[in-house]
Amino acid sequence: MCIKLKELLSWKTKKGELGKVDLPKGHIVVYVGESRKRFVVPLSYLKHHLFQALLKRMEEEFGFRQQMSGLNIPCSEGEFAAVISGMQS
Image 1 (cartoon, rainbow, N blue to C red):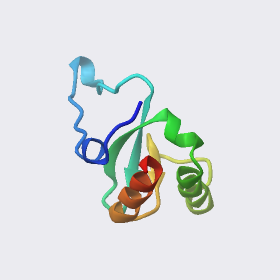
Image 2: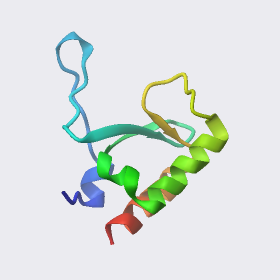
Image 3: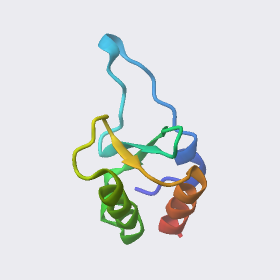
């Protein structure tokens, strides 16, 4: 499934009943930058070498034990957008 960069960057989730967040099947939540902006990305991104480079940086900075839910990606929002764009081209 191909998601356009504009759709990915503008993805909004809705709070459902009991405080659960609606997350499309086959997607994960990542938090990017110092402000921890929330993005929803397809699981298939985890296999891409550009995204794996971000995961390696995450491992080096935070280790495998993170206190917060979701993946915390240590890069700027602009860098994250460039990586996603590069993955889709």
